[in-house]
Image (cartoon, helix red, strand yellow):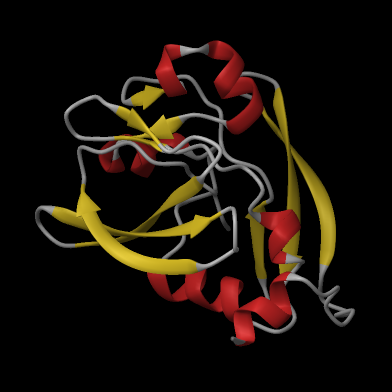
Length: 168
């Protein structure tokens, strides 16, 4: 219930929060960033072309719109130098903190996923995001449903490909 109030309201201004921009020197793509409580987050999904990164339905147009989907191992290496995947705790704090940037603006890229068998699913319906939290065979991720902005944390196969939001 608390999330719904956060998702549809402009949150209180926080003196420590500010927008910025990062230019990825590997491919010259730019990403808007948002600083909150000592962490800086990508506001859009990463779109760095590398092994283990996929465009939904193998469409470059989808990558331009939603960013790439990465296996968990690729996601560990995908962020620009000095950036990384967020932990489950950091992701949870960002999503549920009352001073976070508007969630409906922060998570608008429902890029779907690529399952471990190579099937693409749920574009425009769900956004799936890796965290760095993992066990031997699975890793934590969160997903949000675009129709009602609900969010849930789960564990999934590392061979699936999900979106990445980098943090530092």
